[in-house]
Length: 456
Ligand SMILES: [Zn+2]
Image (cartoon, rainbow, N blue to C red; front, side):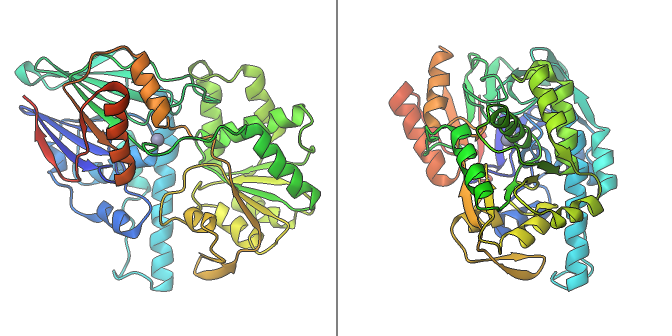
């Protein structure tokens, strides 16, 4: 069996691991590279194999850095099935058309401004590609096995919930007597929304993410921190802008805000959700209410307590708001979407707060703002940053290295023959490798992008 690391090796985006077993060719995750330009440019490189030759794609979850390359693959001739859980399918139906829209917008913008080296600039994929890709989705419930390939080249896969996002799961792959587990992004035991990851099954080879391989989440009380930032901003007669990931994070933030309001820990100021995608994702969380921790009453508090913004005109109208309020808008790293209009408008006012509630990849506007840059470039204009810029860390849906080691330990499995640490910046991945050795005595290695290994 051959494994090739085609993404999320030496970085946290572009997750793609190719597994070849005889004639069966499986891609575990099929994500877009995000963040730095040199990484994003990799999305445009020709695939390392003919998309037509691929038997199937298996998705651990819907986040674009794990699923967003599927429309590119289908537009280039991939005709196989894309396996995922029902929750992941629901979220891909929301995320892919939006990603296509962002690609189209970027191309339109580049053409209007003449900022691209290519004339005309084309989107990486468009709405039609996204729709075509969606027809390939095949949902399989967690715990139920499915088979790709046949005869001696048969590969059996099973999803096992890993608590990172609605529908997220690790994948157990069984082929030729070997058991491999691809962890996907691993969630946290005390996550606000998701239940903790299920036990790691016994396996010979483990492919483990390491986003937080060299970091620990702070012990601070997220609700308390959020209450403080909102209350202080409201007291200063300012508004709070939360660039948020539309799927998962927006719902967690809304849940926290509604709880804080109910407990009178923040003033009862209006809350606006300005992201069509976040609205649809909220509906998915309501539909799949059995798969997460929120009760029906808590979900109702979110949907009834939030002003949900519809079209672009309504979004623009938010500029007329006076007095303290909260706007949640995507994207979470302020790389695109409606949040940019709000950011351009709100960043120059010292009374306002820009509150990030998630990991900000290097090179994104979010990372630059958090680094304290005095100007931010939005739609070709330099905007001064006078607003307070804050970040709350505790909402991450990635296990930190201690939580990861505790989860592995509690799984009570024997040491895998080999552990491959991927999905982390180089320092994070290497730190995770050392933690695995120190904590569990497991030998691990950190594969490089493009590296191919043979497993007998
Ligand atoms: Zn993820």
